[in-house]
Length: 91
Image (cartoon, rainbow, N blue to C red; front, top):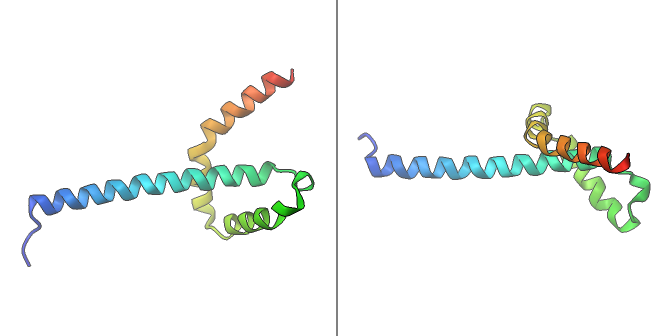
């Protein structure tokens, strides 16, 4: 077996970078969804949204705890900013 060429290494590096970017986008999505589910008032949802909300909550709950923790850390700065601006609006 021969060593990979420079072009093959560059292609592999490019593919890894794409996968890392996609993973980060998915992790931010999971984090935002987890925050939404944790903060939503189920009683205020229209009945048409209950099944979708339940499906989302079940999907998040089925994920490994470490993955959810990492996802929440990615969105924490945005959530904290939103909470701070919300506190300013209610005063």
